[in-house]
Image (cartoon, rainbow, N blue to C red; front, side, top):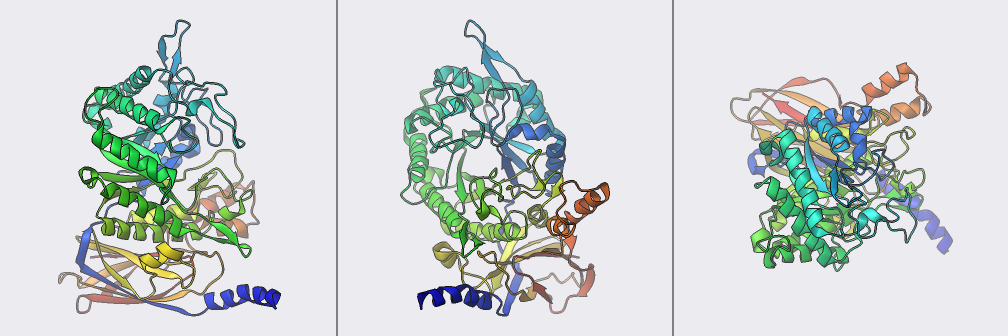
Length: 556
């Protein structure tokens, strides 16, 4: 009997998921909920040396172009020792060595190449101060072990400095050099973050040693750039009761109560950073996302910040905000990452963005970033399931979600959807029953936009949603409105489906490559059209596929 019941569960789920989905989405352009913070315009990656590759530079230009606001870029290994050749989860700049007498020697060539590429693309660096140069490491050998490492492996770049004063001077020299090269006013607009995930294997030191590392780092930056924006600690997701939660709170306590080990004075903290990650799994032979885990991380972190009234309004940067934790783990080897090539990734990200806005409002914190830890990997197969924005220069569907967000401006306005899953339900169990058919909307002078999605945690076929979109609150001067409907689904803004239709070529012809490039851009669902405004409102109806995302833009 039990075997028969277990056999029926997937069948029943499939039948329910194919049930007709209807959603009425009401948008009131006159009901402002505050400025639309461009939390989407942040990206990062492990391999800082990919910045200067042909595909890396091209992708940086695309990231600049997708948004009217500054795009911030964060990368690991900016201070690591080595020859500048990237590998999976590894890069180096060799910025610091010592001569035979133990005197510091600084080399700027590789670092300058990275930051010059940022400048050329027009993006703004978020300077992650890590990791420890070999000559400064208190445990230098082995310094680097190629990925994937084995349990128990430790690498020299992850240890505290043998001399904190020299660490502080290294950071000072880096900041002074960048200020001289790019201008003090420019580098003062950058965010300077101390280390990455010091609560796990990226830091083989104690909490107290990290606090000291932080003190000397921020003192070094501020010595060169007095009004620099400094912060941290870039911890992993603060799950309730976890070491990560304790580490984040301890750093805030240190900045609030202690004196700087470097200066003896107050400890600067201009922003707070931590990471939030989901947790996908294989369930009944399919991928099931873990959106609730990412949101739980955020809620716990926001609650920690609220414990410190003096920090409650500081900018919060989620300096990695992703469906899971390993960009360099391809879905070919890690099947639970199979969401990355298709439309599930952008749909998940759209839903996460809306829920993060709601959590920000609930906790009354100053969230400014949900940084997507995805870029591109060199010399890897096409669509191999890495967490990337492009593959061999071909854009993946997820980058079009950010292009959609870049078309939104002004104030966030009120949205009500009969198909939405309430935030508390998502926090408790994810999106595991009915799909989440919901939206975020903005309004500005002469324009408005509504981003809608039909998201479900389970990567299974499901019914399209019949969406009735009602937008009211248009100004009296808007009698006719131009409507543009952009779409991400299997047939739009999706080079992956086109690549599969070609037979999944790993050596596409020039003609195929050009076709894939074209398919990777953001595409309209249908032709733009003029629509008459009646009683300050417009009503539209359309079908939105499972894991599809639409951006309906109005201009007048």
